[in-house]
Image 1 (cartoon, one colour):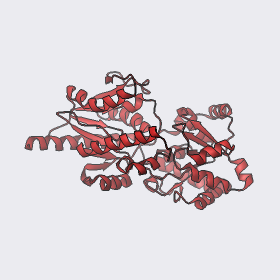
Image 2 (tube, helix red, strand yellow; image 1 turned 120 degrees about the vertical axis):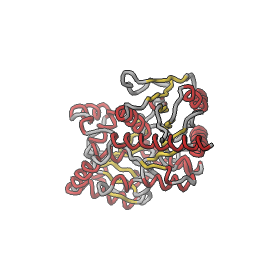
Image 3 (spheres, helix red, strand yellow; image 1 turned 30 degrees about the vertical axis):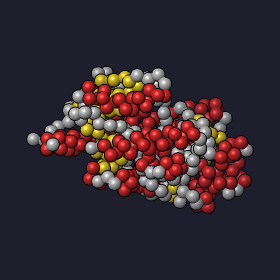
Image 4 (cartoon, helix red, strand yellow; image 1 turned 90 degrees about the vertical axis):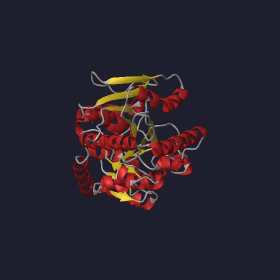
Length: 389
């Protein structure tokens, strides 16, 4: 008889660290979907006290709170979480943010979001936006070390696109039959968007006029700035540059554009603010160098904003025919795409309609169902290997 997984431990510390971005959205949306989809499993969720948990677990959810007093606490918890899970008799430990280890008596499933942390540190720094500095280099080096160690020891890997699956398998020399691609669901629905009055108030507070070009400040913003500068003066005046960013450090090209008054950067905006920016942008530009998935694509499409993006990583897989795609470094192509979208309403509406259809393909219910199937496969493999030993 095939052994069955009964107790699943999930590291949800990403929700208690005040973080922002695609991994945060993945954890925030997948975990509730898992609890809903698998009442036959006993889930134990692990968080710490670094910041308030930005999710209200359902009544009856088993929570374990790890101690936290300073940055060293996070490192200690990285290395002691498996021991805590072992005391809870966890069968499958699911680490949702690229690294983590199996408890004694159980196995580990690790979601590796892209190949970034498995590449040389110099390449990983590029993916983090080319922001230099000792702190960033130390952080990227640590993430790389931990991710490589976690992958070596894992029973099963999950990633979020077929493109990421191929790249991770090659970088880690990992067997494809134990690396399952499970796409994200859409980050939110149209019903979650702020209404017209709320959008107007948010933009008034920020002193931003609708019709701007929106970008992510760590996703190759220099190409957006350079392409925008090739637009006509009238288009530049009508469509200024606005970026959101999860951190205050900016690459030199964007910092210079901000200093000259050509761009605005909204640092660590609230969720409602980001959604209002998507709703009121004329175009979302996303010339990312590397994407394991590319959640901002679905965010913009849900908000009814046309997208121009790079053709790298998983972006073509996720965007399909619902975006203009160019090489990440092709400034001329991005400028031409911006011109098309800013001056051709038929083209804009065509992409908006295709984007609205595209997002319906991605649901968290499906992601949860496929993730639970991985738990069963991973635990069966682990139990069989343990029995053979």
